[in-house]
Image 1 (tube, rainbow, N blue to C red):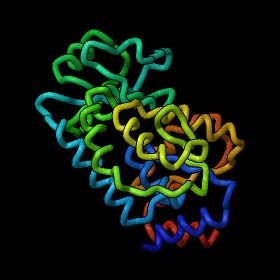
Image 2: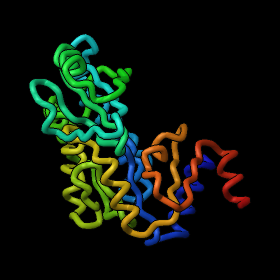
Image 3: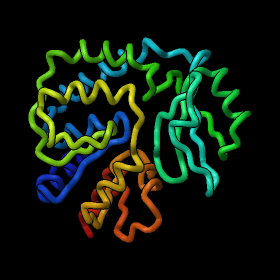
Length: 235
């Protein structure tokens, strides 16, 4: 498509001046654009991920909440436990928790952390409850061949740069990512520390750019369709 070709061309043009990252499933797209996976293999790996995660799917048992935190509220994993897990650290203002439905409801009643927004999902993504899924995923992708990334790609798990690990470790990195919190706020800070002046979000809508700190003075661009690609190119 025009959008995919545009991203490929921009990355090729910018070369080492670009850093890639993707939120949760987006990490697979980042690996594709860094030429670690071809398009067919990327889709196949994503399919395996979905199949592996589906074994935990049960909306009657699990749920997730996004929490829009109060300004002064500080939240870390120490506040969780007893069936409640910290799934995403998206920004200074937003985190996501997940776990067993009953325990989450009790947590919500006990902790007035901010505005709780239920997410329309059926599994406790990015928590220890996904370990069985991650093991199954590892089995499914055992024959997948990764190549070395051609750009910096920051992983959701522990901010590991794929450039700093062997390509033979990529599958394990993706496995662990399934049951580990998405450290998105720290990912953004790590990219900002490289003195970047522009963030470009490629996706269906402007979501991740909202997680960039207010004091970032650079440009923020959203590209969601072919028309916006053409507008960007005309600039």
